Length: 87
Image (cartoon, rainbow, N blue to C red):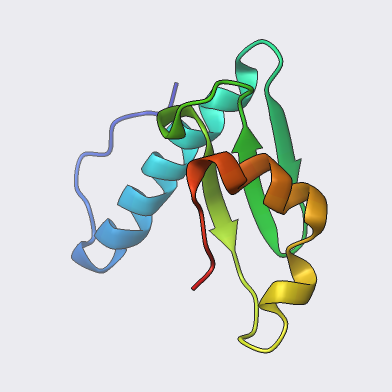
């Protein structure tokens, strides 16, 4: 477990909160039958559970022209039941 900090630099609060939320979401990858997709441009979890609570896109960094090329058919099929859209 991570040690508790005695003080926090105000400029790092947003980054710290984001890292904490991402760690929580990535923990769903430990569920039975879950799949973690972690690539250079995105990280997302398909938990195998048909509930948006347990399936998340944790990181996605695409340029606006390449977003549809980078999100492949397999990824679309995995998330289509959750009505996810990059728009």
